[in-house]
Image (tube, rainbow, N blue to C red; front, side, top):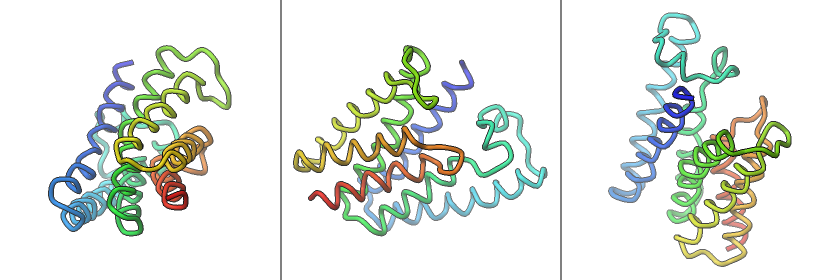
Length: 182
């Protein structure tokens, strides 16, 4: 359980990129994301080659990440993509959906989730949807964009699999649907 809590807290630490965007703008956030991305690429290559193997990191990895890329790399890539291709409010909202709704749904799902479908708890999925709606409402998008964006992000999280990483698909799906519906 401690492993999962540390992993979720690390996930929330990803808020540094959207918070940088809020405080210092797009250029600063893109520069930070690019720097983190480059550092992660180096760390991932060294980790996968067995040169770098800190036990703390190994303890935080999911099974599929142990032999492949970690979600952190996909998270930073998705942040750069939404900042490059979407307006500020859409990019920020989609990043906050990932940073807040994903770990929150995981906490609720693992602690209180009883109804399971496709390996996900319906309780965690409901929390993802509701928290996404709350986040998108903070950006004052229209009702259709709020509901559609939250549904898209929730769907991306619910159907994430071994072939897709939700750290990449959640922000992209959320941003794309909000953009379409605005």
